[in-house]
Image (tube, rainbow, N blue to C red; front, side, top):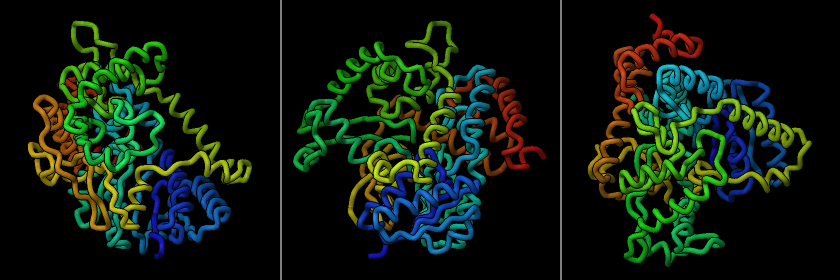
Length: 458
């Protein structure tokens, strides 16, 4: 069978650019396809095209490579269009973080909730919808896969403002089959050296993980009829103690098992994306009278992320130029969540993955159209969430609040309505003062005027 045509918008992506090249060179279902690379930076584009050509030549696969700074030149006949772009990601996350902190809000990631998530949506969603309209015109049969944060807001926006395009959204967490293997190992169902989950184990396993992206929860875990949630708490307590001896200076991983313990103890369910989820609740903001346990969130460390991105790009350029061997690239680069999903869809492999899409009744006490991350069956017809059950009270309320925040954010991003933007900021769980919200909005609009639509300033 022929391979798919995959168009990547944001070819120089920190996360996705190299894995898709690796996958197309190694997958029997994708080796005779086409990879169309799009990036607005000509130097980045040339580097990624050179890397792809070197990899495909050395591995002997028959993948055609095209590249353009203008997406409309290469979109036609795409089977998949993957969005992995970001405009000056670190620069504006730093701006979001510093201005939010000035107004009393701490963000450790600054890209999906709080003022950072809201303003990243204002910057990115109008671009996503423009891209979707081009896909509808030039590649109407393609699946548009959003791999850009904030995943939920952009996914909701695509459903609402480009419903003619077939789309879903992804995050790099919960990558199967690694996710299920991870949990089986950590509660002792499988040994540490296990490389897969055998079918006889899968048949005895009940593992329910879901929720709004970056605020997902493990709500049920059984093996052969036994409740494994106490074993998860034991695992968290063990890791919490080990964490003290190797405490990260980076904001996202810092004290994660301590935060996870607090949230698990509070809600009775486990936060599976705690490096983000700790930013989705007001408990770690230093806004009360008592000390925050374990500590107030440390703010996003833009300098560290910037250095990591520079280092990763320098390595990429060495592979592209021939200063590093392609054999090393193939050994160090791994397929990711998105590449595995595309392969399974195209090859009809019948695998299931965690995907962000409408609920469609899978979670009984969330709205039918709630845009959430659930384990889903997927093929070329698209994702179909597997039955989940219900969310427990407490964490259910948080899910509703975040969904409303994201829906209001998407509306504000596409309309430029300042009243809706203020409502989004004050529905968000992190801002609890109207004047702070107003001042934060004004400061962020002024600081980001060069990358926001003009309708915000009329």
